[in-house]
Length: 290
Ligand SMILES: NC(=O)c1ccc[n+]([C@@H]2O[C@H](COP(=O)([O-])OP(=O)(O)OC[C@H]3O[C@@H](n4cnc5c(N)ncnc54)[C@H](O)[C@@H]3O)[C@@H](O)[C@H]2O)c1
Image 1: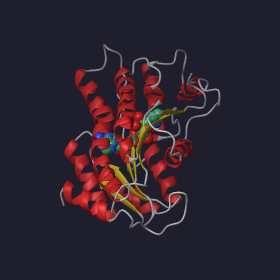
Image 2: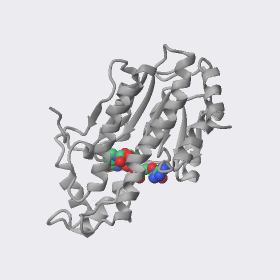
Image 3: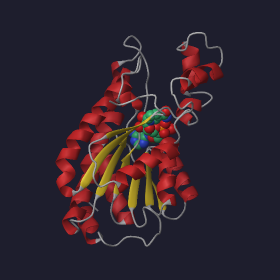
């Protein structure tokens, strides 16, 4: 199937949705980077509330395993969000397998921290391609399907939600590739929101604080706590616990962000039909907006 055929199929199917109960009963959702971490946690909450969910991830094996652990309304599909053709293929396969797309969560992201002296131009390009350009590819192709659905049912609303970061709201020392791409993502969100509102497609970013219990931070070998301890990023820290405590103290609500916290903001975006183009912080008060 090509993209034009997928758009036609999505148009025909616009009122054909699974008869499931819950806040998202009948909705079809895609979560990129859905095999683990925030993505999997968000997918679990969407699934629990009745959505059918595609876990789209570069780690195909884990995406498929995570989908089977969720249940029969979940599917694992391989995608590399830094490749336009791979994202195009993802939306086509989603329509083939589930019939359409109502909610697209652009969550896949990578981090390569480092100062100007440390980070190489290749590492900068890698981070930018996944976190910034990849988000553009996701909006480009997901919105094609949603626009087709809008033609068939002008009353429905659709959502594209980027999982951004608190580092998209304030700069991050020795982490400029990540922060720069996330700041840029908010510019894309605001611009796409203005462009796509006429098709009833809302575009919002969610800016979580640090998910300390997730693999990105807590992996015993590659996690950021271990990396920061070895790099001496926290002066005086002798153990991983010291590093963790120093980070926990940055948030007035003295804990890390969880996938459930982020999922609440996802539900807000979907259920609120009077908001678009926003960057919603979920940081335990670490970043306060004015
Ligand atoms: N963990 C945090 O503290 C934190 C804080 C704020 C924001 N975020 C953001 O949340 C999102 C998810 O982060 P996480 O902590 O769950 O990360 P994670 O590393 O646990 O999971 C990321 C997932 O994305 C997948 N992925 C990586 N590159 C990909 C690509 N090119 N195409 C498709 N999939 C790809 C990985 O295989 C993995 O399953 C990211 O956008 C990240 O920037 C994370």
